[in-house]
Amino acid sequence: KSSNNNAVRVSTLNLVDLAGSESVRHTGNTGDRQKEGGKINQSLLTLSRVISSLGDRTCTHVNFRDSKLTRILQPSLSGNARMAIICCATPSELYLEETRSTLQFASRAKLVKTRAQVNEIMDDRSLIKKLQRELKEALRNKGGGPGNNKDTMMEQMKVLEAKAASAEVANRKAEEDL
Image (cartoon, rainbow, N blue to C red; front, top):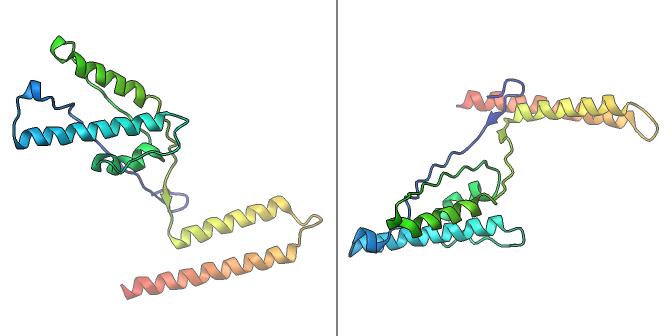
């Protein structure tokens, strides 16, 4: 909790291990394992397309719906988040194509820009107190100069104070009912 206004900061942490592509020629999987590998590859391809779209400034639509993975990561990828991606590669010639693909994915991911902001949730009482402080500050800054009706502002202040008192009474009643 934040000490100055009783706001609760909210955040989400997503840790995803993408494990890399499931190449049948390297794994030798058959049957259900082969189908599972195909689904993993499909999700990785969809994630790669989403990352490419997010990094492209001219793209107006990003299709998150093609994969469960991209639907789950949508809030983190496209909005209010900080994102870090760690890509692992091997110097082995056996996995040259996978390494190249991983490095291309990493370069596209670097182009994605997000706008992280602090997420705070306030209870009613804290929100009312914050609004009252803002109103008092506005009154102090505006003063009673020409064009300002100080009486109207004072009436609005009294209405807000009455609402704050009413919210406190309702809050106490709700706590008693619990």
